[in-house]
Image (tube, rainbow, N blue to C red; front, side):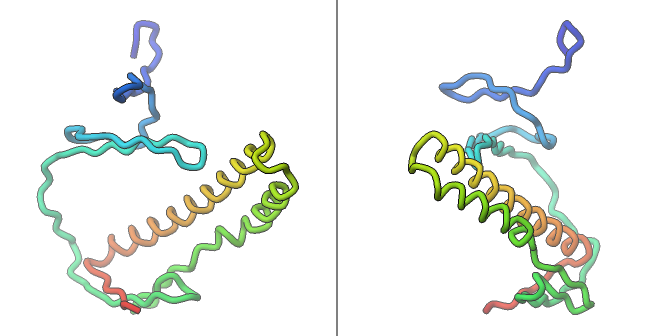
Length: 154
């Protein structure tokens, strides 16, 4: 808190730029070693690498199973658990096609073309984030209940 009672936003020092405010999405634990700033889909991201000592993890389960990757299902486990494939693209396919048709009608490299191109880029970014989230959810659910999952090499 500052003198006015407002909460201070976290800041990070970037060489050649100076102090930059950022939204902290998780706790930064350990000693900061470096930061990588990138831009994707019109948004800026900072990946902060830290170093800290942690003990070797021990999984509570000792179960190891073989998983089957497929086309109809993302992953099928021997106990019958199935992870369905991501349908984010199908849900947004109509919107993406509409936006791409709008882009095709614009003069290439004009200001309106660039704005439309940015809309399409954001839409692709949105689809990629949905896919990434579903994969993280599936891997977290699997790793919490099983010690090891072996996948086939096709």
